[in-house]
Amino acid sequence: MESALFRSRGTRESGKVSFIELFFDLVFVFAVTQLSHSFLENFTLEGAVRLGLITMAVWWVWIFTAWVINWLNPETKPVRLMLIVLMLLGLIMSTSIPEAFGHSGLYFALAYTIFQVGRTAYTIWVLREGSVELRINFTRILGWLVLSGAFWIAGGFAHESWRLGLWGVALIIEYISPSLGFWLPKLGRTPTQVWDVEGSHMAERCGLFIIIALGESILVTGATFAKLEWSPTHLAAFVVSFAGTVAMWWIYFEMTAKTGHHYIAHSEDPGRVARSAYTYTHLLLVAGIIVAAVADELLLAHPTGHTDAKTAAVILGGPGLYLLGNMLFMKIVASVIPKAYIAGFVALAVLIPFATELTPLLLSAVVAVVLAAVAMWGSVFTERLCRLLPQALNKQAQG
Image 1: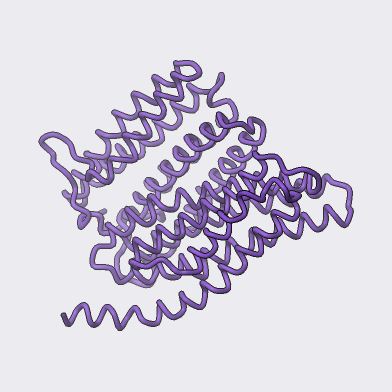
Image 2: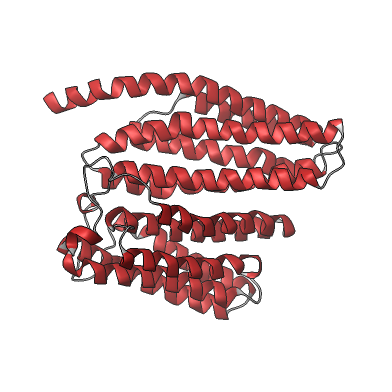
């Protein structure tokens, strides 16, 4: 039973993503769409705070599941059944997002808590036949999720600012727990060596979520443009939006993802890399893409005229968050920050004082050029870095 329920290690197939995992991800395509649309409907500072909180929750429920499936075999019926039940809970959670701070708050909180607690408890049950260390690790995780779940459900019953505060506490509990090794009284903490992840699988799973987020951006761009009158201005806005999305794809998959895959596959402590680089920094990437998608929709709706401060903030803020996430990732996995990322980040900062003087179309075009320059410059750096990696690892082993 153990050999069937647990993912094999060290084989060519061990890092392969299964079809049921891809099917499971469809729920999160819907969730990301709900996030961007909800922010557009409440395009305020309060809406931005709410977007940040719910985005953190959506990412956290997905990445915790990715960790679980890194150990469990999704081709077995018990694990497939778990994923299908989680899909249903995920749909309830995603459907509740637009009114999560209104009448659907309790449904969101219950779906989220049952998702997190139920998946972890089920994993502990499955691990009764497997690694004792992993079972104790998930027991620690369950304790933290039960604690945070109490705040999620209490927030579901609360109203307005109380809900925001209680859910904020719940997220703080969940986000600090991995860095503390999920420490519990008597059970202690889990060392990262216990998190013996299959690096290639974790890297591919996180890359697929970035595809989900970028895909939502493409959907928003296409759906919005389809409703507009075809004109040179709208066509230019459409091309600029698409170019920005392509540049973001290029930056991640030709630079960040390629480097991350090399390093986690050769790391002596892949659990540490997976926790710090993938679990945390990818949240910034996803948030940046969602904000950029909102900016694209605003650009297509009003490509010319005055750029107000809120529109300028999302046009610059989305790519800024995205580059920041990439920079932190590279720093964690390779102990280096490519100059291309730094230059792109500085260029976006330089645009801030002039942003409201430019039209949305011109500002977005400049941002797209900046991202394209980062992509082209950075891909050359990444190729050189990945070629040098085997040599560095050999020297490290000999030393």
